[in-house]
Length: 483
Image (tube, rainbow, N blue to C red; front, side):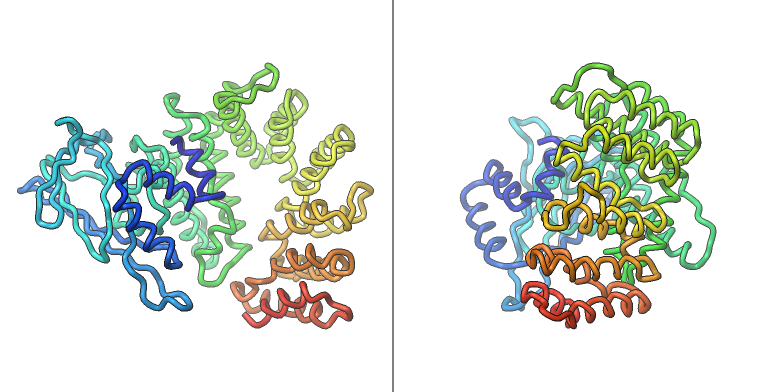
């Protein structure tokens, strides 16, 4: 299964993918064991892996330990069946041939038709377990959980240099992507700490080199490249912090994007030029991959806010032969406040104002923009002739998507919270179900600093004190306050 399929299913049905995957790989005993554990107890396993190499014996050991945190009604959890697909990379980045391993005191052959394999699947079923590969001539770098072979949280002893090595060489596209994401998350958290301490922000040159090697590798799938050079979202980074700091995370992510755009400007320019097309829209993988890669390159370049690059994005917008390319260029331009942004948004609306779904996307794009003070723009859009607060999809596209911009929704002056509070009260009179869904954006208010907590709490209390408040909104708001 290609990496993009795995990523999509991880959002929309990881359990389904996992069950289908093991059903094709293992026997009925494995299936029964898996079903008895994974589908009878709640929680995602945290799996820790420690590795060691014995140069004298030419063996490589992987020690696994797994734990599932207690949940209500299940204080004690049984070990789960976890299939770990893996390979070992040598110093040149090539997959090592694997022929045998020691497990449970026995030497087992893992060869296929007397031929070595390059990816094998370990069945981890105990709380602690060790697998020892034999005939390993040098210290390898393990490529763990290839193809996302199990829905777990993996904690390994891979160093940053190991991750950079996997990013550059791993034959498994999912692990290559994951190595880049792990490095990006670590880098962003480190820079957030520097930002909070008012230290200068410096981008690790190894990270730039790693992404450059991906971007310039013509042998890689273009859709994979597009995914590999996409940074983790701001919400993902905030979830990893003890106290979420939207301003710091936004500043750091913007800094990294601009630094990458600056240092890889020539490569991004070349990417745009080499992936242009004047042909009619075709719905197939090569065309979709080409568009994805070109459009992310345009977005990076537009972030520099240089007139030459704004003109490039504007040219891509005007010459686009399909909605995907045109909307992507519009999105790149919409992140930069100014006359060009206003004109291109107005032009797009004029062209598509009679298409309900496109106009809905147009609202969502503006609502989720990270431009400074965007709450005022969104307030104006509430009064736009094409917006109807009574329409659930329109409400979600504008108000719901505004909450997806951490830097504006969590603005330190409380303007984002006040806007949401006002909208919840208005919508509750029209459609309590929609209002209850939108008010849930307040549910994690305790994750933020004291100033933001007070401002968010004040809005929840205002909502709770509203006369005639629906049971739907009362339930969500009261639970959020009590959390």
